[in-house]
Length: 115
Length: 138
Image (cartoon, rainbow over all chains, first blue to last red; front, side, top):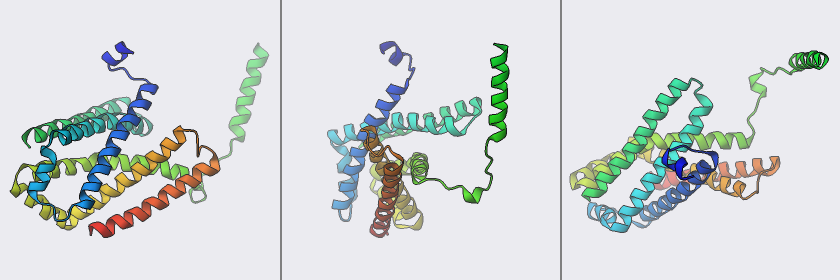
């Protein structure tokens, strides 16, 4: 298992568990943000920036973004393996899409850093 | 040995010959569980690309009061509302479909009838919640 993790090799069980644990984090974050928008009337910049300036919210937001990256890695792979038959095109698409997913985390990190 | 191989070829030939062909596309219907599965995929892929807008809007709105005002103006326009309702609706379906998957992981709703019924229920609930969302955000 350790060598599997180190070499970034995946298997079905790992994907199954990763998909569900990341889904739980994203679900919790979605519920929290929905609750925030429902309970906040006339959102101001101070309130909005203040929400993300606390350490707990920074950790929560970054955890959600990393969870999205892992979730999307598995989900998009599942979709691409079903619909894109050419392995060269599939590898290229996966590379680009995973790069975008990593970009989401990178952008999030810099934004949270500056808040 | 040789006999069984020729028998297998013969059987394969028969199977191939008797395989029913149905190309009348208007008579083929997806069962609700298949529609549910496709919707889960479509909403997932859609949200992946919607995140381009969501993360951009978040980054700009949090960075400065001017950025916040810009994003607020976009969110009050047609495009902003369209993307917001669309993304929230996709997320709603993906969560409902995901919760249905959790129930199936626990061993329920796996039969033909219960699977199709839960798929119909999830789609109906999603449509209702999307209408509520649309009214709330418009």
